[in-house]
Each structure stands twice: as structure tokens, then as C-alpha cells.
Image 1 (cartoon, chains in turn cyan, brown):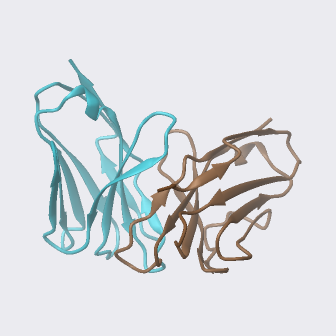
Image 2 (cartoon, rainbow over the protein chains, first blue to last red):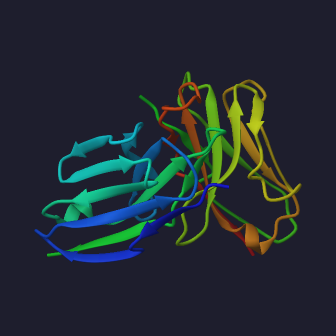
Amino acid sequence: ELKVEQNPLFLSMQEGKNYTIYCNYSTTSDRLYWYRQDPGKSLESLFVLLSNGAVKQEGRLMASLDTKARLSTLHITAAVHDLSATYFCAAEGTGNQFYFGTGTSLTVIP
Amino acid sequence: GAGVSQTPSNKVTEKGKYVELRCDPISGHTALYWYRQSLGQGPEFLIYFQGTGAADDSGLPNDRFFAVRPEGSVSTLKIQRTERGDSAVYLCASSLVGYRQDTQYFGPGTRLTVL
């Protein structure tokens, strides 16, 4: 079974700072997804990374995928309070199901 | 357009009872997935439908859990003889064709509490 690990699990950062969330997965998967979840809400799709070296950016968030290292990163630039949420990465298994990490709870402090 | 909807939004039941959770996928989406999310954890895969058939049910924890999708649209997750450990948020997702490269869109979830 595909195992997905994220770190850190909890992240508290000041507004304006930069930080990176890491997502490692255990076996080969060339599809990696990032989701955002606000408290009490469902998951919102952020990025779909479909190949080695893929990089996608949306606003202050940038995601990348290195399939050889089995690593994806979500980089936050100049954080703002609205980015406070829990971020999940998910790797796609051979059967089309997603395997999720445990999430990174991000709090941006004014 | 309408997204994935799930009913009920909250369900409280007693240990040993039977519950049904409903999912309405995005219109036209052939693939449907059920996940379970416990507090502080990521979603855990339960079952995946392609059309009317269960293409992968390897995530169902035991035979108390069963899901159907008789007409290839709405799906129902059924849990028999509920246990306190079944308490979680049950999430449904759908995608257009279910093949790789296909984004899954999630519903708001049903919060199940077993007393």
C-alpha cells in the first residue's frame, strides 16, 4: 500500500514569511495532488501534478513534483492570514484511489 | 454548476444500528469514491465505483460496510451494526472518467457519530 507522509504536521508562521511543506510517498506514483481543507469544510483541489518536474503556481502557492525522489513540495510565499487551513497531499495508487497524507495544519499569524 | 452533495450532513446513531449515507456526484461524472476521515487525519480510501460497478473495494474495513451505485449516479454507503469506532466524516468524491490524470471533486461530507 502506498504510504504518504507530510511534514511538518503543524506550522505557525508570520504574515509575509515563506515556508515549504513536504510530501513524501513510499512507492512509485507519478500523479500527485494538493488539497486545502478549511475547518468543518470539505477538500478543495489546489494543484494536480502529472509528471516528473511538474511545477504549478497559483497566487502565493507553488507546488512541484520530483517522482525520482518521491517528493512533492508546496511552497508558500509571503504568507497571508487567508492561507490558514489544513493542506493535504495525495498520491494516486494503481487503482485510481488516492492515498492522503495526514495533513499540515497551517496558521498564519498577523 | 452543482458540486458533489451528500446527505445527511450529520448523523447521530446508537451502537448497533444501521445507517445509510447518500452521495450525489457531479452530473456526468462516471467515477465515484468514498473516503473516511477521522479527526486529525487525512481521508482514507474506502471504495471506488466506475459506473455501476465497484472497481475497487479494497478499502472497506470489514463486511459491515457496503456501498451501491445501482444506476451509475447516486451512491449509498451502508453500515450495519455500527460501532463507536465508525465515528468519522464520510467523504464522497467524483471525477469525470476515473482514469489517471482525473481530478477528484469532494462533497461536504457526512459527520457520523456513533454513541
